[in-house]
Length: 140
Length: 140
Length: 140
Image (tube, rainbow over the protein chains, first blue to last red):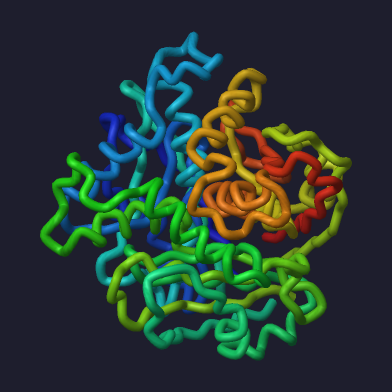
């Protein structure tokens, strides 16, 4: 049983959805030693999140941002937590809808993703700054 | 430490929410050898997803389909990714809202699910075809 | 490789979002023996869920409740599964949007959470009663 863990800090990304598969993979080359196992990526924040989705067409990521802004609007009349800005409370809700982690099977030393799957950083704040990830690979 | 991994292809399911607990279990009988551990099911697609929900009343699954179609509508004016059909971009968004994997505790050789819990395949495309899953069980 | 698993029953919580990090941690003191690994918390129900979000300001949890009630309303005209009360079908949908489990890295015997992250029990029923969790820690 192998267990490799690394904490990394991403460069700041603008608000929106961004492919970070290559950043994650380069943080933990040891996953190539695992024949069957998992990679987990965990984000240590409550106003940014992680998900897996389409890795090819940038308009998919733009449509994610547009849709989440409609589904979780700023300045809703029922928000009480408003003192950190109008983008803050929607960011918390979006983060829980998408989740703080992704866990991907490893097979024969590589991520066993589908052809069109990539890892997204979902930055829900206007100025979220650098985000910290814990990247862990384990298996036999 | 045991690690069992299998890739399976489901028969095509129509658009909607479908119980697949038995298909998953029959793919990996080795999970009966695990006294404490996990089963992870991962879907290798970006327009179908997996979740855990009520395993008894089919109208629950119908209401999921109805609600997700309202919450993530087709033909929203802000979608730019439209060339694969009106069901495509909503499918990507629904997939990330529900997630690409479920991870269920194994206790004494069985899934430790609640009485009413089952695994759903969430097929978000009109004609999604066969979907590939990676099914992994591990533990002691 | 260590694998510690415990099933616990929470006291009944009212409908809404509640911090349960300390209840979870006190259930499994063995996680302090793990230098690199994971804690998974799994809820054995389909009308309550778990998520990770802001651990400081109670109005964040109130705004979660307000927003989810708008995004997944009671008494929608398209619901067919209505015989368990108007809060039941929305509870199932909310549960799948948020998820049945959270998985958090363990580093040097502690949860490797961000400063502002805590574990929420999301109680979606008016009278959900006691909820059962399976709490598992594993790693090296």
